[in-house]
Length: 298
Image 1: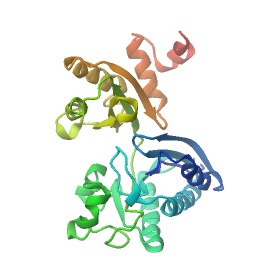
Image 2: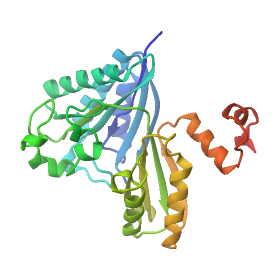
Image 3: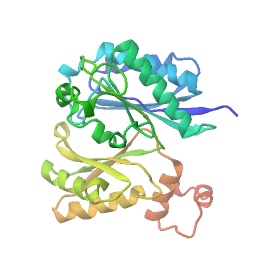
């Protein structure tokens, strides 16, 4: 069986289209790799890229992308609503077919060592590849962002897994291995960021909400709204519709409407079928029957 792995690099650029395209070209030109999807957000000033292929080919494409991003993105000049610490901020490997999580961990370590050695970019291993328990959670790894890490990287607890203990303009990169997750954002019809932060605090697992949800309240100033930006790390444990319904209820408490939602990158089919089953009240149908009956066409 051919082994297939997905890689989802996040780069700290979502406004300069010409820069994003040059970085994407590194993936497009990589042999044996398919660019599945990419999504840029100007408020976040971030682009999420999804690519897939055999492990060695994806590893090389990820390396080339990191090299190009380091060349074109200066974190000293970067501003955006999404937390970040590097030009290539995060690079997760996800097993798709014939791959174990341990093999994805090996890819993360191989790439991290090369990035640290050849590019002198500090690398932190996270999630399943983490070398310390306190580095499993990406939010903990990225604490303080680029500006704060300039000083904290000098402390023993923030020593990178690979590369130097000092930041250049490309910042630091988190490289890891993890199961699939869904980036799911819900937009609120308000400019009051405190409401967004309160709702995000209520839904995220680290502050007592849903254990499978990571969430931030983000100001989308250019669009005149506030966003609940979420990473759904297990859509079977916490379905998309459950997160949406929670946010809807909390927003109503503040007299705020839901004005839109979006998925960034790819989403498992089952997660969408679960949402269709819930909202169309088709609980007596299996996923296969829902597809056969073309529920999405009703």
